[in-house]
Structure formats: structure tokens, C-alpha cells
Image (tube, rainbow, N blue to C red; front, side):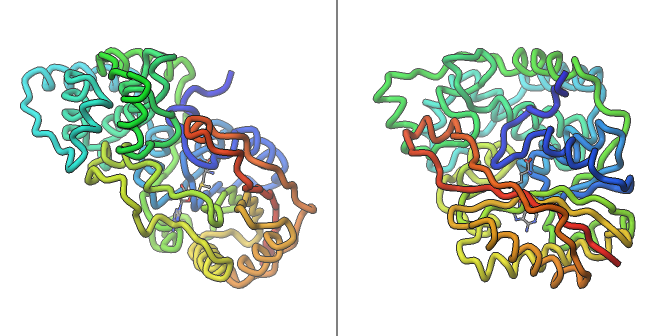
Length: 364
Ligand SMILES: C[S@@+](CC[C@H](N)C(=O)[O-])C[C@H]1O[C@@H](n2cnc3c(N)ncnc32)[C@H](O)[C@@H]1O
């Protein structure tokens, strides 16, 4: 059975567990598996499930929260106890709304009692340093918004699961379609989701997941120097997704300001040259972590990124960043990502993005 932690929360450009499974099976190494752009943690978590030591980082708080929750999880009982404690505190609490200019959005997105519970949890959960709180926060992120007309397990009015649609757009859409926010008891949903997720027990091994920049990995993961034999990763795609803007409601839940405006510094790249420079710096960040020989599997994508261009750029950036020679293990595989639920909601045409998979062997 597919491990139920995998799908705690959807994320962008995530690769399937089978991708990780296939590449782990093909590796003759058994040191640490590392993902510098771990996203929702498919590579790190699947490696742990398969008994491999694993670590990863991501600059995005949603990714770090969700991956940290899966890879360093509390016990089922710890989650259940914490939910009871939080529920009791919530009944007694006075919550001060923190909705910025988006009051209208919040009042149409959540029913009043649901919003009170969501705001309480946003304030109470110490997701950055407490393992149990991080797991509860990750469950909340997965349930915060979604197709609530189809499932009783989402807190919000009708929205896509994958992205947070912009506030003004959502308000117009709900008004046009006469959509009222559903009355949802957040704690009942969280208890139900806990039971569901823990039907597959957490892996015996714990992984290390850090909220941070891939370029700083040498200092972040000092203790992993020379221990990484397999990198399985997918860098932010060229010219494709705005990881911050499209996740603004989840970022708000994790403590950021309520804003859906264009954000900078989200790891998005529009130009091949600056993208290549970024990749060189990212690979340089993991240079000291790699063992004498290592296998590097990369899924890369972009609207205007052809296969041979992607392959040349990867080879060039790996050699420059790692200062070592690389050998391409096969010719690479190209595919088109599936149509996303978010684009179906927006009525957008299928994305012209292509994805390319490559595997390199890095020598001494
Ligand atoms: C294509 S996604 C990875 C998805 C992942 N493979 C999965 O299965 O969920 C790329 C990730 O790179 C992250 N990212 C962008 N710039 C970064 C940086 N400088 N350091 C670390 N992570 C970064 C983004 O936040 C995003 O989560």
C-alpha cells in the first residue's frame, strides 16, 4: 500500500514515489540520499521508507513543514494528545484576527467558527521547533483549502487543493457561483486525518529536513560531509511557477502576512543564464557533502527548455559547481506534466512545460 504520509499536502512539480523507488533500486550505493530542493519530500521520505538515511532542504516554509512532518514524525498517540490539548485551549482562547486587507476573502473562505479555529491554530502551533506541532500544522496545510463540495475534509469554501487562488479572484468566483463557506469542525477533521495517515506506520528511520537555501548546504549539513552517495532532486523549473504567490494562504497559516501579491525571492528564474548560475551555486553547496563517487538524478523542467539544452546545462553546471567530472548514465527521458487541478479550476490551457530526467555519475 502507498504510504499515507506521502499525500499529506499537495505541492508543485512533485515527482511520484515510483520515480524515487526506480532510481534507488538502480543505485549501487547505500550512503545518505540527499535532496537540496526537497519540496514536499518525496525523495527524502521514500528513501526512509526503503531503509536509507536521508536529508533535504527547501527554502519554502510549506515544503519544510510538510517534509519535516513526514520525515521526523511524532507517534499517533502524541498527535492525538496534542489535538485534545489544543482543542481545550481553543475553547478558552481569544483570537485576534490577522487578516490584513483580506477580511472579505477570509469571511467568504471559512465559516465563522471554522475561521476562529484556524486562526487559533495558526497562532498556537510551534511548527518550526516542535515535532508534534509540525505534524499538526502539516495536516492543517493539507486540509486548509480544497474541493470542499466533494470532500468533508477541507476547511475552506470551494478552492483547488494545489494552489491558493488569489483573494479577489476567489471572492468573485464564490459570489458568481453562490458558494457559501462550509461549517467545518477543524479538530474533528484533524482527528480523522490522523487516523487515516497513521494506517501506514511511520518509517523506523528519521530524516533531517531543514528550512534553508540549497546554496548553504555545506554549513547546514556539516555532519553529512562526504556521506552523500545519492542525490535525487528536482530544482525549481525555469519560468514556470511562483512558489510563494501560489501558496499564499498556506504561507499565511504558517505565520506570514496575509498577502497574495507578487512576491520576490521565491527561487523563480526566467533567464537561462541566471538559472544556470543559480544551479552552479546550488551544486557547489553540496560539493563537500558528496562521497568520492555519487549518483545524481535530476528532474528538470521549463516552458522553453528542450532536452539537449537541459542536458548541456546540467552537465556544465554540475562540473562547474562540483569541480568534478560527470558521466551521463543514459540519454534522459522527457515527458509533459499532467494537467493540474489548479489549471482546471482556472480554466487554463494545458501547460507547455516539459520535464526531463537525467542521471549522472560523479567521479572523484
Ligand atoms: C520542483 S520543486 C521540487 C518538488 C519535489 N521534488 C517534490 O516531490 O515535491 C522545486 C523546489 O525548490 C525549492 N527552492 C527554490 N529555490 C531554492 C533554494 N535556493 N534552496 C532550496 N530550495 C529551493 C522550491 O521551494 C521548490 O520546493
